[in-house]
Image (cartoon, rainbow over all chains, first blue to last red; front, top):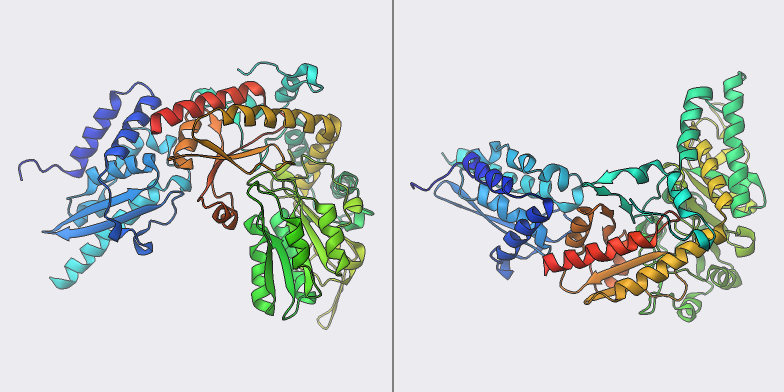
Length: 147
Length: 414
C-alpha cells in the first residue's frame, strides 16, 4: 500500500511530465505513444452497452469494483483518444468511488488539453470523464445501500 | 503567411483573401488554413459590414411598421429576396421563401406538401448520397403515412446509378428528393435528367442545393425542379438563412407550415385566412439582419463570377487530388467524373479523427467523421473520412501545407 498515490498526486506527476515538452507536437507524440501502449480490451467487452456515447471514435469503457476501489479498462479505435484514456485510467483507476466522483481533474486544463482538445464534443474526452464518474457514483450508491 | 497565387488564372486570390478578416488569424500558432468550406464558408467583409450596418442604422421589425426604420428594413429585406430570385433564376420573387436553412426548407416541404400529398403505399425516392437532413424528414413522413422510401444506389466512384434510378420510378413514386451535389464526396448529380425522368411518372422533385449553390450556376427554370433549397452560410453569407424555391402552383396549394404573425391575412377566433406568397410560409419575425446580409454574399459571388470561382476551385481540386494520391496508404473516397472541390479520404490503418486533430495542431481545419451521411459511409464500408473542401480563397500553397501536415501526422500515428 506504500505506493498508493492520491488522484491529485498522480495528476501532479502528469503535469510535471508535460512541462518537459516544448511543443504540442511533442505532447501529441507522447499521447500517441501512451495510446499505442494501452492494453487492449478483451473482445467480450466490446458490445454496445459498453460504448461511450458522444465520441467520434468508438470507445468502450468497463469498470470493476474490488476492495472499495474502482478499476477501469477501456479501448478506442483512435489512437489519440486511447492516449487520453490511458491518462484518465492512470489517474482514476484504483481509487475510491468518492474520490473519483469529487475529482476536479485539473490536470486536463493544466497540461493545456482543454484548449487543445476538449473544446468540441467530438473527441469525447468529457464524455469519457462523465462515464467514469457515473460508474464511480453507481458503486458509491450501491455501497451506501448495502451498509 | 500564404503568399499570392494564381493571379494569372483570372482571379486575384490574394486580393480576395484580404476581404476575409478571419483568414489573418492564427490557430495553434500557425496561419489558419480553412478547408472546412463544405460545412460552412468564411464571411467576407461586405457581409460582416452589412450585418453591423443594419443593427447600427436601421434595425426595425419589417412589413407593418409605418415609421422610417421599418420601411428601410423592409425594403432591404425584400431586396434580398430579389437578389435570391435572380441568383437561382426563379420565375418570380413570390417563389422565394426565406427559411433558417436547407434543413428547414426540406422539413417545410415534408410537413406541408408531404402531409397533403403522400398517402399509404406511395413511394419517395432519395439517393445513397443524401445528407441526413434529406433522409430523416422523409423517413418521418413515410412512417406517419405508411409510405416507403426507395434509395438510388451508387457506383464505386460515388456516382448515382441513373439506370437503377429510372427503374425505381413508377406510378407509386410521388416525390424524388436528391442533392445537386454530395457534401461528403463532392459528386455532382445530373439533376436535369433526374427531374425529367421523375416528371415522366408525374412525381414532384426537390433538389437539395446546399452544396451546389455556392459553386454551380443555378437555374431552377432550366432544371425544372419543383422545389430547390439552399443555405446562405455555405455561400459566404450569414448563418440562419436559407431559401426555399417552389413552383407557384405547388406553393399556392400547400397548407401553411407554421402559424403566427406575418403569415395571415385576417384572423378571427372562428377562422384565419392566410397571407399571399411568400409570406404565407414566413410566420413570425424573420431573421431580418441575416437575410439582409445574405444579399451582400450573393453580390460578392456575382461580382467574382461563378465561372471564375469554379475554374479556380477546379484547379485546386485537381492539384490536391494529384498530391494526395502520392501519399502511400491514402485512398480517396468518391472519384466521380463531375465533382465539386471536395476531397474525402481515408488512410489505411488510421482513424480520421487522429488525422484531424494533428492537422488542427498545424492550423489546418478539415472535417472528420461521417459528415451526416452514415448510410453513405456504410456503402463504402467505412465509419468516416477526412474531408478537405475548398473555397475561392484557398490556394495551392495551402494544399502543400495539407500534404506536409498529412505526411507528418501519418508518420506520428503509424
